[in-house]
Amino acid sequence: MVSDDDRQPRGVTVELLATVDLGREIEGLAGYVLRMRRVTIAPGGVFGPEHDHVGRPGTVVVLQGVVTDHRDGVSTDYGPGPGWPEDRDTRHWLENRGSVPAVEISVDVVRAE
Image 1 (cartoon, rainbow, N blue to C red):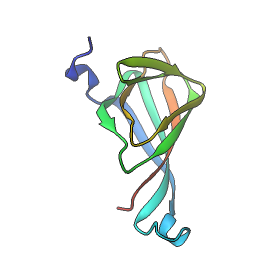
Image 2: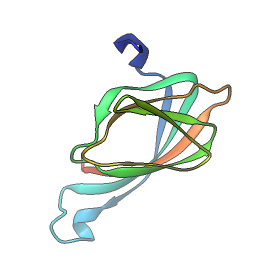
Image 3: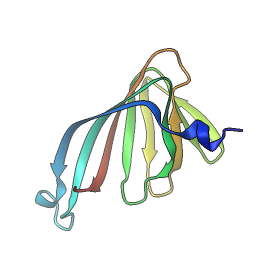
């Protein structure tokens, strides 16, 4: 069993790569942006705690290493290659159980800051 302490964030670097103002592109999406980020999770790192994606759907591709996605009591390894969808039903946390940094590209729709 994984404790809440084991799900606390550590060893994660997030770099914003690009945004697109969706309000300028699609009627009805004022106040939202399409965001692309590079997320690097060091060996032993955790992208937590457990969180949802209500109101911020997205998708992920893993460029390097392996990311373990924990959701609904199931652990799934991804990478390199296609990752996972993140929709309103997603509630998860991520970790890197490997010996090399895991690098992913995350693209999602979020409220503009």
